[in-house]
Image (cartoon, rainbow, N blue to C red):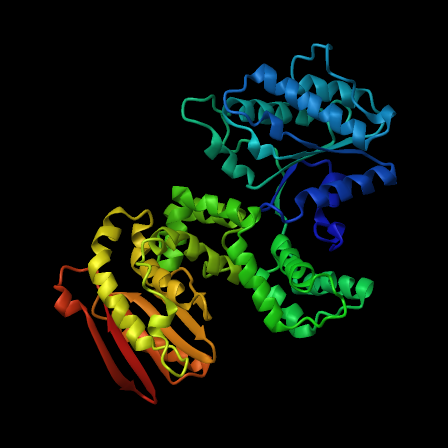
Length: 496
């Protein structure tokens, strides 16, 4: 494992300054590992009493405030029995009739010589009046620190504190402040592994087993995972344990890593499934569809939504906005298109489009899709959940059905770039496709230039510009397949 204490060194300074703060990160990025490592370090140094506690059990819809307070007090006590020496623990709240969390924490603090540092995990599991009540109690105790209340409190969850208000149903009590935790000094994001940390992690395996991850494989794991801790470990484990069967004498290659990536995507572990569940939320759906389409959005309207999908780890922290790593970029459109793919006729199979010499007939494939699109797009565009990106997803689903058994599709998407770039690899063939929606008179000329640049980057001389026309024109006008020379390149225009 990567040394967790190196990942968030600024936290210890906030604790030293007796501050309250939030720490957020997507699931399975190492938050809990980090918290327990830091708490053990602080306790071992002897200056603080540090405790990690989860409030997840109080995150039940309809739970009363009394029950919630009793639940979190018992969670604190039970956690202390596992993490702290008896002399540093709070008293057992059972049967003691503490009125609330505020009183319980105050009693604990007064009874200790050393300041208390409290790490509250899963804070954003709380809902409605329970969430408001807990935050108010922490805020009310802030001025009494460190003698009459914990010296430092950290709220840990998936989202920044600004998002807590979104969890409070209309009609619930208000906190009466601009921020539900307005005493917080800072909001910290636990970042993904750096490239160097990915290398260090994989080198630990080499040190222990002698099995080498070649430099090019380490670089590709870092690229594919984007440093996301769960994905980094999952890719490495898929290679070492699942494919090579823990036989450390076997060599690790890029081809094996590619196989591991594909298996991981098809398997869709809990991590990926829980991520995909978020696609059903409107605020996530809006951003994801804009990325798939390459659309622009009104940033001042959707700033909170952008921050939300960043906090969830679905998109990266840099601009232009794009999916957080290549694995997400592949699996998210697949999930969005899965309902479509299940309706593609069974007879649409790879062998239909493979020539006698084993090569893929892309012309036949795209012309077949034109006919499929003409017959099916009307119904799909009317009732499909992801209406804004249905055109692109229909083609991607069709391609996925055909390419699945003999190749792969690499997708490049980013907010505001006005297109999707697809690279279809089939055995030794490579096909570059650019997908655009006909917006105005500049769309086609812009598309030719963009495709030309994409081909330059790939080192290819031929590519396909696919234009979706959502306007009222007749199908005879929309459907065309034209080959033209643009400079030293051949561009095949595919109208839909």
